[in-house]
Image (cartoon, rainbow, N blue to C red; front, side, top):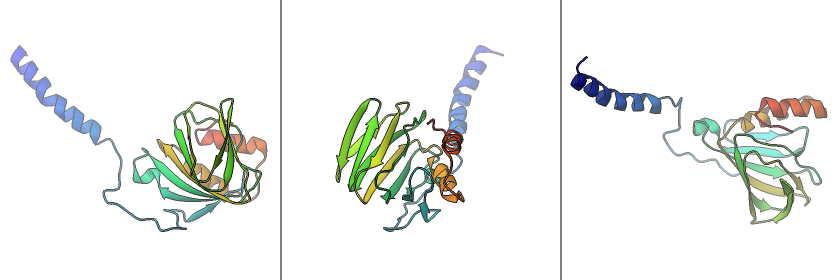
Length: 178
């Protein structure tokens, strides 16, 4: 092949390769949408079993963003309960406290958050939280979305509270480590 033909083939193939890469996305919402107060996208309100009995409402699903982002509203009904110390190897989390009071552990550091406070939990750092007030509400943002939405659906579908070993397996199946 002549050098000029080779260069021409590279110049024309590069944009096509870039387009092919961009088309690897499976699906993404092309219009805005509204989720009314008290509603959850796709699943309605998800009542958890196991680590706590809170109610989660998916506001923005990973399905809407090709897995780039997920946002949940959590209505906390489990004073004195929360999550075990766990790690998300692939996701960062942000919690915004809309109502109530929570204790967070991030690595070795402990924080008390009240209405209006936010906390960033970086991936690969062990963290947990506990609900301190009688009631509470938080907005949880996950980036990328990962499998947390499916985790919530799995926990809600359980017939009874899982054992610690079952909880560890469910966490592992959804890209988290207890």
